[in-house]
Length: 86
Image (cartoon, rainbow, N blue to C red; front, top):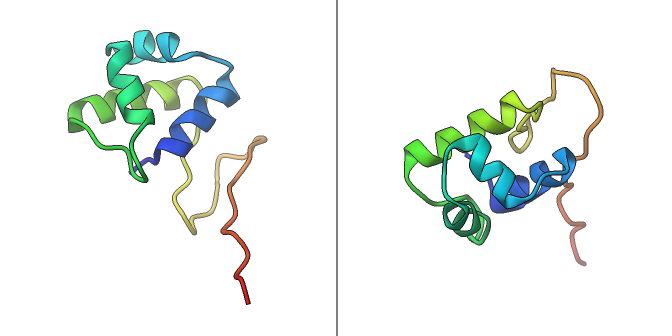
């Protein structure tokens, strides 16, 4: 799974816009826009989601699941869980 936040962050790390990601994934810009507007996990057709993930990975993005270790090395950012409120 990939969240909408991860998708937007991946584009930002690559320095590409929605149009470029759509072209790389072979999808339409509205499809990318809908994916990025999803609350939480990206919703959509599995084939489209697979194409986006493959395009991001081919471009050099490593998607890291919550709690998983990053094994690819290289620089990156990770969103931490917000601190617990007392």
